[in-house]
Amino acid sequence: MITWIAGRANTGKTTLGKRIKEQNENVIFLDGDEVRSCIQEPNYEINLAYLANILSKQGYDVVIASRVKETKTEITQICNPEWIDL
Image 1 (tube, rainbow, N blue to C red):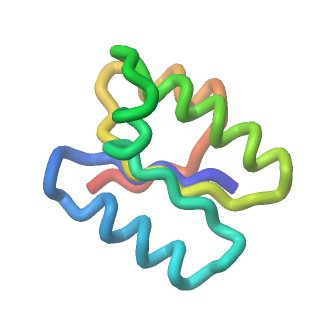
Image 2 (cartoon, rainbow, N blue to C red; image 1 turned 180 degrees about the horizontal axis):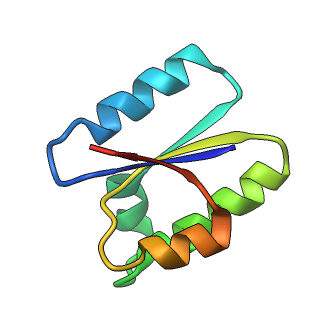
């Protein structure tokens, strides 16, 4: 299962993601701000979606906290996450 927490800056995306991770040890939490520092591309969210899809296929639950601009439709096509909009 992939859950994508989306919202503007300072809306609690990371805090919520960390709380979900604390409650389930099988969750891999990916913080968009941290990933963006490694994947320096304009649409890093697309790469994040592919990564989440790979991890999900290996049996992990993936929670992502990241702002989403114009890429929500494409992300849905790649990994079909459950969206939480803050």
